[in-house]
Image (cartoon, rainbow, N blue to C red):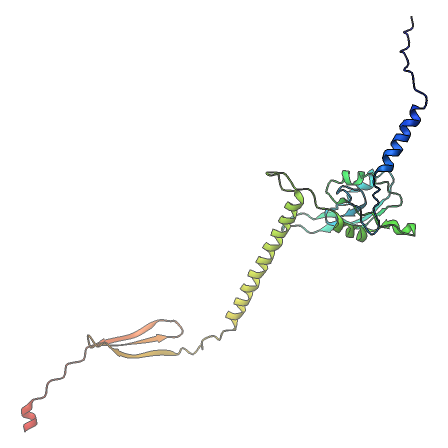
Length: 258
């Protein structure tokens, strides 16, 4: 048995037209606000998708962004380079060196998949959108142009109190500490070399076996005299003498009378 249809509400003829006219009247009574672009720049949210910036130092040429791009608008070229061992007796390693990184924004659909899949945070969104060109070939931005867009990337929001330090700051601080340690080591080596050169420039003592003799000195309390002889080659002291002078006899007044 079929269910009965719900009762339909009766419509007043022309109600839809009345509602449309009401919306028009409300809009007409409001003040129109027009942004005078380009004199007045729009206030865009920080996460606006304008253009993509490349942080080249973080790129490891993993090709993940190019493989995941649905439009195939990312072009990457690289070559392998042999890195010497970090420690003596170690093994040589090979690493990828980036030769070209380009994005064709005439094909890009701004989906952001390349930024999301990048495991090393090498791609970032910038809110800049004023890069229109009269030639479509100019919309292919090479890595130098993509690096310039990094200056327009807004700073990330502040972390909550007690949160872990971002890995970008930790990596930058680690690199800075390493460079400071290398500079300190180089300064110490330069100072040691200068000190060694200064010592080498000092004149050496003559090899004739000269002897330095200190004159006799008399102690006023005891009346003793002493003298030392120092060999310049061996540094030994010899010939130390000491003696007590005999007291002089008083003169006899009778001898003077005679």
